[in-house]
Image (cartoon, rainbow, N blue to C red; front, top):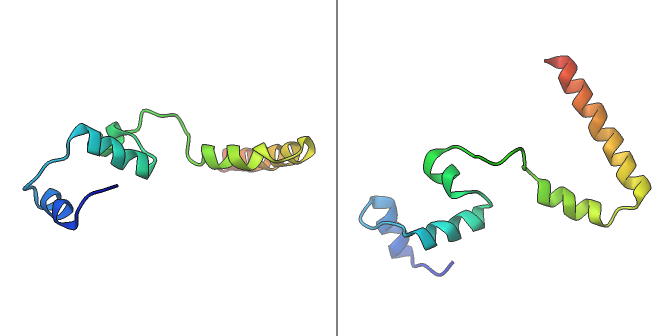
Amino acid sequence: MDVSVAYISRVESGDSHLNLKRLNEICSLLNTTESYILDGVSNEKNTYLSNEFSAILKDCSSSDKELIYKIATIISEKRSKEK
């Protein structure tokens, strides 16, 4: 993101404001939504690490994917029992 330290300082001190374009750039860098930054509420479903898992699974064989699924199922079932 092409901004100066002085600009960041002005935004932090309230002397300058972000426009929507800049807010969108920040959200893209942070991999979050504007609504989360502005309201603290995410309207996305549980997508934490979804992109990372997709990248890993893309290169896995079918048997590896099945093993990963079984491990995730065991962890999910264990957490359900703990509740």
